[in-house]
Length: 173
Image (tube, one colour):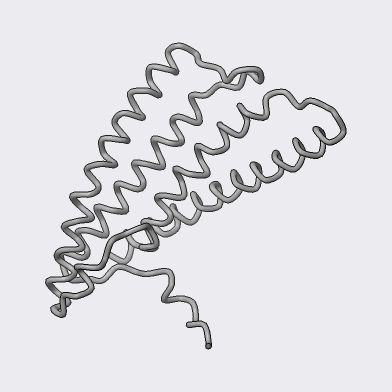
């Protein structure tokens, strides 16, 4: 079990670095565009580049957040359950059921990537192939599904999932 946890953490960590690089790329693109526009110089393809950079920034972040249990979740009901085993069971079951949504998203993303790759789709103006970005999104969503299923099965076995906030000290008032 530790091997799978360690492997998933390393994969999600590497994916997180890619997501951060995409966000930094978006920031740089925004700064360059604003500066060039202030100098009355047009920078064609800004919209297309930002659209492509958003794909890894968002899709990879979902898997990273799921790994460290930092995704948006409703815990109003579950936190009121005093029995830890029952609480873990319900949380695990909801993760597994919720992962079905992401399975559908992954399936649709793969179908779209195959269809668009066959058409040799290029982004407008800058003519960059879009297929690698679509496949990156599919891979990120599949990683998210794997993480959610693994954490769900761990919770069903009564093993609590890691919470990234546990690694930080509580703020002093």
